[in-house]
Image (tube, rainbow, N blue to C red):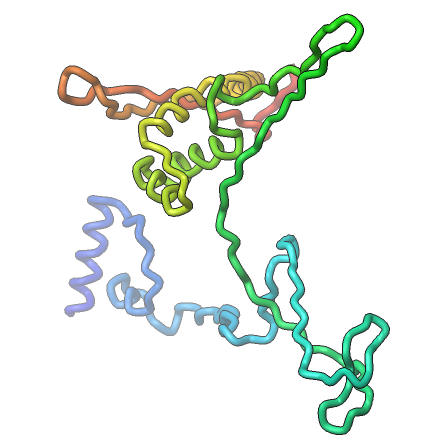
Length: 251
C-alpha cells in the first residue's frame, strides 16, 4: 500500500510539474518510479583509471625544452689518459679505465627571468675630403623616448592582464632584481602600449566581420567614473566569427 501511494504521488507530481531534468543513476530510484529492480539493466563497468605508478604513463619531460648536460666523472688517477685528455687511471690498481655505459636521469629546473641593458651605439663618421658627417638613424622604440624595450612591455602587459598581477606587486618583483620601476611609470607604459595594438585590432576586426555568420554579445561592466565617487555602467560589445557549416549556402 505504501509503494502504491508513492507511485500515485509521483505520477501526480509529474502530471502537474512535468518530469524533472535531473537524472539519478541510482538503483533505488526504481522504488519511487515503480520499476522492478530485476528489470533494470546491469550497469556497464568502464575501464578503471590508471594508477599513479602505472608503467604505461609517460612521465618524460617535454622534448621541446632545452637540455643541459652535466657529466660527473668518478675519481681517477693520472696514470692513464683517454683520447680527450681526461685522466682514466684506476685508483685501486693503476690500470686503464674504459667506458662500459652510463646512467642518465633528468631534473626539471627553472631559470628566472632577468634584465639586461641594450646599448645602442651609433658611430659618427666624417669625410676627410668634404667634411660631411654620416651617422645611422636611431632605431625605433615601442614608446617614443622610453627606456622600456618590447620584451619588457610584453612582460608587464602579460603579467597585468593574463596573470592578474597588480602593478604595485610587479614593481616589488622587479625590485628584487635591483631594478626600481615605479607603479606610475608602468601605468604609463600600459596606457601608451594601447596604441601598439591598433593594427592587430584592425586586422582581427576585418577577419571577424568578413565571416558569413557573426555572433554579437552585449555585456554591461562597472567602470570607474572619476569625479562622481562611484562607478558607471560601461558596455562591452564582443563579436565572434562562426565558420561552422549550417544550413544550405546555395543561392
